[in-house]
Every structure is written in structure tokens, then in C-alpha cells.
Picture 1 (cartoon, helix red, strand yellow):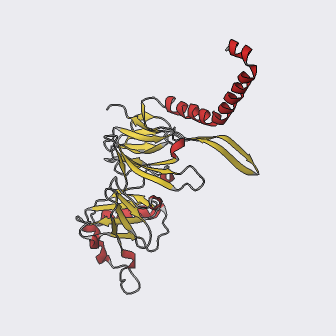
Picture 2 (cartoon, one colour):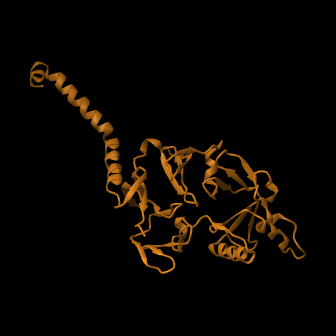
Picture 3 (cartoon, helix red, strand yellow):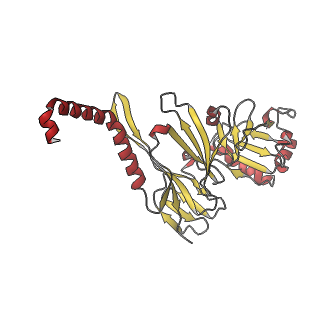
Length: 311
């Protein structure tokens, strides 16, 4: 280098300028990777990375735990301002296998609710079920649009749909209940959706629907308790053995402490109740609030598996 400097000082200066330009151009990328790797490395004790924080080149990532705890429902949006969904897949939590969801338009998956690792409810007119295995759609009969009794009263005979169903799902957030017949793919006439006619879609409507199903002797699954909107509620594990509160995980019968920690990053339960899924919050490296908010350079957080202590 010294000889090169002595022989051709101009070349050395040019090389120095080129290196400086390259460093400046790549500084944001280098900074991002260093900070996201820090998020992955300095994670809570006894956790395993399911989805890394380092996803800059792959667009914005959305992660939802399926209600049965068997998979992560992952959506990837384009990194530009449109945020259009470019990829939708399921990550199997038992095998780690990635399974693409065969839908023609991934944007559809923003308008509905997961019922399980195999089924998705799309709300619209009409409502229908999307089979996540093959992308097939199955219409739902809206019982609220069925013929009424005198005085515009709901006819209780339609409750037979729920009593004969194989799968019944209650959506607390929207105050709806969905019932699927034992052979719903071959018998779509037995697939229905219902909501309280006088309801406002509030959380209380979900509780009323629970009581209705209990009165009818119908077994059901609540499919949207993992949402942050209901974080102030008691979140039971799939078998009801554990309960999540804001300050930890407890045995539901005795309220003995299983794990003491802040649970604001809780996303859902593992299918076998051996662990929970956490989503670390991301942050903006630049966040200025002066009359209007300016947020730049987002550093995401990883999605983690937190193992519960052995019983």
C-alpha cells in the first residue's frame, strides 16, 4: 500500500473516495443488519427464533398464530408504500415445514379470520370459507337473511344447523358464530354464519353467543382470543389447563404461577401447550413528533417460541 501510494497517489485517493461512497451507500443496510441481529441474539431466556427480525429484503411481515396452535400464518407485504401482500404461507410448528397458501389474490387474506390451520373465514357478501390446503371456497348461508317469524323474529328452528354441525367457531371480535356440517365440502348447504340481529359487533355479543351455544348443548371453539384487542381478558390454553394474564402464565384451577413475566408480547398457544408464541415489538430508529409525526427506519422484532417450565 505504501509503495502504491508513493507510485500513484492519485489512484490511492480515488480508491479511498470509492470505498467511502460504497460505505455511505451501504450504511443503512449495514446498520439494519446489525440492529436486527441484535434483536435476534439478545432475546429472552429459554426462547427459540421462529421468524427472524431480519426481513428487510423480504418486505413487511405479519404473523398470526392459528387458533389450534398448529401453525403460524405468515403474510409478507411489499416493502414499498403499497404494502400489497406478495406471499402468504403457513409455518408448521411441529415440523418447521413451510406450506404456501394457494390463493389467487393474497390480499383476500386481509379480510377475514383464521378458524384453524386449515380454514379461513372471508367476510363479505356472501361470506365463505377458504380451504387453506387447496384454496377452494365454500359459501356460508347467512341465517340472519333467512325467513323470519311474525314480528320479524328469528326462527329458532335454524338453531338445528348448530346442533348438527361438526365444527362450530365463535368470533368474539365481530360477534359471529360459524357452523360447518360434518361433510361441509360435499354438503355446503349445512354451512352457516349467524350474528345477533341487534348486536353491534361488540365483545359482549360473543359472550351471549357462547351462552346460546351452551344452552343448545353445542361444543364450540373461540378463535380470536389471541388478538391483542382482547389482551385484557383471561386467555385460556387449548385444554383450559393454563391461563395467561398480563403478568404471567398460571394454572387455571389453582392460579399457581407457572411463569412470571410481562405477557404483552403474547400471540398464542402451541398446540400441545408446551410453549407459547411471542412477537417482540419492533421500533423506529428515527421517531420525531413535532406538529406531525415522522417515523423512519423500522427495526422489526423476532417471532419466538417460549418454552414453559416442565410440570
